[in-house]
Image 1: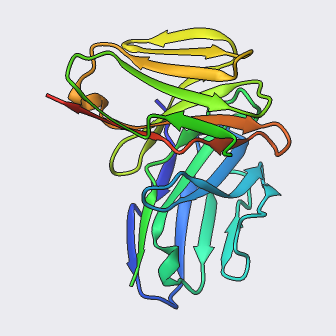
Image 2: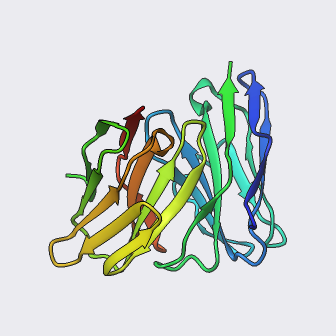
Length: 115
Length: 110
């Protein structure tokens, strides 16, 4: 069964360093989501792509976060510089077209610890 | 008031018990999703409902659109069912982005 791939699974970094996360969605899925989940809370949407275009990045802290999906397939989320408060699980998900009945398929996540 | 509310917040039960988790929502919806998150982070979609009832193995999900309420039931619960169960609805005013409930943490004791 096709899965959403994410790497790395774990990342430890020091504050002020740059970090990057990668996501490869299920083949053929046009919609890609990046979420941030702080321990004990629900996922918070950071950015939504439809193919290579950003649909919504209103919750993305653009002073330090950037996301791209250049060819409309895989995607990278970058944080520069990382802050202590960025420690969280970063989840990527994809769906066929992002409609109300589409199922979102989640990757295993990247757990970021900022020291 | 949150747009999607779940109850209970925490639930501990013995193996074999019948489990019910409730979800109420205040927004107009066209579909409702139930998801499961195990310790360690992975999220799995269990059901997408727009009406009636769906069953998959020991899991049953129901929705009452008029009452704006959905339930997730687990029959013959097992310790491996221990997880956080989350109800989410697509926001029809915002690209169908999911509005997430706070989750129900379920622990099944052997």
